[in-house]
Image (cartoon, rainbow, N blue to C red):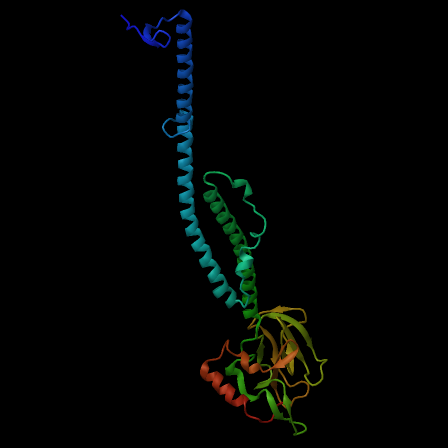
Length: 325
């Protein structure tokens, strides 16, 4: 049996029992339901916006995000390794390969050019892991740029290497007559006594005395530029264009073993010793030009002479004696 509730009547100054009507009962019930609904809704909203309650979809999304974060972390660690390798390649490129092939080093600004100014990562901003994603994307872009620059640099180095090999093969580097075929090395580069006028004049080449018909060898790869006797004083002579600005000249030949326009290699027989032109005896007059200027041939015999042979040749070449032409 429910307890009877009372209220204080101020008019009669006495307590009177509370009598509930059906209307009061309905109103109380409706108010109870409404308050319960509002309280339940508020509680649900709080739970939905907290970590206490997650839907299956949210749980799956959280797991996916955690997996992406793990993958980005692994990717960043691998990027450190790749960056170290690329940096090493760049240092070797600038300080070894390009130095060896006499090419200017690539400035750091050129290797990462194109990453200043506009914000190319604006679309990645505003997310929970934006900093991580932007940093990783930027590093990948910089590495891609560096790889492209390095690839082009290696292409250039390859071309330089090919040119270097061609240059090494082209530069005159052997004696045009073998030592065993020489009578003597008669005269060197510099001031010598003219055999005809007996006056002191500059001798632009080196004279090698040998028997008539002794083979003369091309001192480097090249193309026969001239093989004629139409140059004053040289008699029958050959001019061999080696490329890279180098030309070698072989004068006073008895006969040719090569023709104009022919490609020859170092060591090929191109002619034979003679006494044609302005000459006082069978010998080979040998000159080297670099960029149309005569230079001392003595510096170009490293290909087939020992140190002892070269020192002996050096001693004779310095003597200011009489030339053969």
